[in-house]
Amino acid sequence: MKKIAALFFSKSGKADRYVLLISATCSYKTTFAMFKNIGIILILSSIFLLSCGETKPKEDPLQKEREQVYKEVMAVHDEMMMMGKIRGAQGKLKKMMESDSTNAAKYQTAYDHLQVADDAMMNWMKQFKNPPENTAMKEAIEYLKDQKIKVQKMKEVMIENLDKAKQIAGFQDI
Amino acid sequence: MRNILFFSLICLFLTSCVERQPLKILNRGEEVNGKMVHERIRDFSFTNQDSVEVTNKTFAGKIYVSNNFFTTCPSICPTTSLHMGRIYDKFLEDDRVRMISHSIDVRTDSVPILKRYAEGLEIEAPKWNLVTGNEEEILSIAYDYFSNALKDKTAPGGFDHDDLLVLIDTNRHIRSICHGTDPADVDRFMKDIEYLLKSEYSQKK
Image (cartoon, rainbow over all chains, first blue to last red):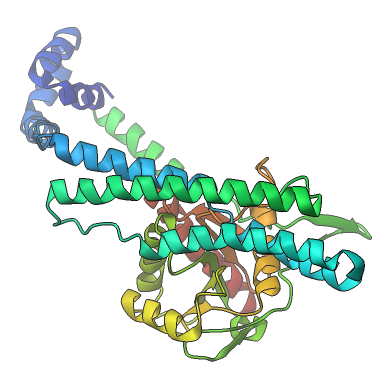
């Protein structure tokens, strides 16, 4: 078990010191057996060391900015993505129109507002094309910044129309 | 030293012998006459990328993986499709495993658009069906798959943003779920598929 401990500690690059430390606390026999295996320990610890010593790629500030803007764009999209809910509510309104013809015009208006909200999301998604990896950083950032403005406009249109639809149809939530 | 080695070998043996827990049925269940009866995935009929009708019969005697997507989705769908692709590749030769991805945007995703998407993923039906159909039916079957999977979540209704993959057994019961954007979770899910294959088909032989 101590051998395993030594291997474990070797992760911090102090294998030999620990082996000696453990050896010092063990009996002569165990120490002898340990040195027989020291070759294996050395090989294993060097594998550990190599795997730990990988140099991290230098962080490119432009790459970071690109990822950041992309995240911001997607956060707005994720927040507003509710296609299932909107279309479910539209289905409900269709049924209400059929069963309650006196209020059909009202429900149709609510339906239309939902459609404007749905179209806003669909149109944004259809035009959005995340720049491929090999696009020049500055160009990609510029594109994403422009998309951020577009997605925020989309959010405004959606909120306005969802609120109107809820109000007209008397829905608590969409 | 020899004793230590012996001891660790026994430890190894013991841990490798621990049996896996069987996959539970995740659908809601009710006790009827002392027996647990679980809800099942409802009957459905959709159309895949080759204009072929896909129903429960397509998956009769098979286990299958189900998820939702839509072709214009810019965020989670591409990643989820990538990991669905890993499942497709892994079980390509095993006809007992099939896959279905429901487009929740039936207004945009017509059969030709699904076909193009399938070609982009380099996948084929009947192994992996990208389906469209009646909007209400698609939205309500999504509820079947995900209300069970999502019953712990407090968020009401929304499945637009769920990256969930659901594993269905030969009795239309949900047996495992995972997040299709989390590679480690998909790895665990693929082990569940292998495990379900063993348990489903060993009984029937």
